[in-house]
Image 1 (cartoon, rainbow, N blue to C red):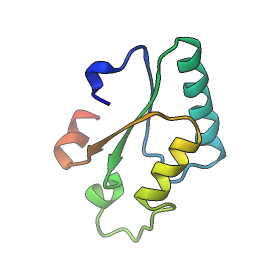
Image 2 (cartoon, rainbow, N blue to C red):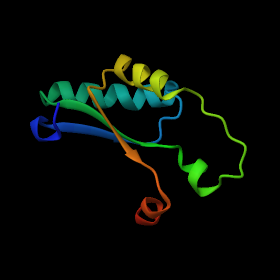
Image 3 (cartoon, helix red, strand yellow):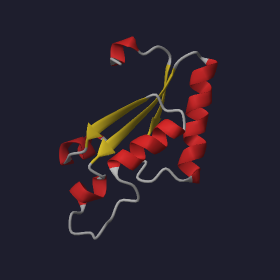
Length: 95
């Protein structure tokens, strides 16, 4: 599915390092709104996790693997997942 072919996109933006109850509620809202608009439920996320780039000395483990995350997002009705490579340069844009 090309981004050009997506109609009435409804996006959630976030790391979604583990699709827990709070994330599930947000994603459910995105999915429901997309249905209302006859659109596409989308997520815009990042890989690697920003802490790995901004603070590599920090001991940190992911809650879910990328494959588990993908399945969890799909289970919540997300149709398109855009994964942006997280870099130091990108972090400066997000300040």
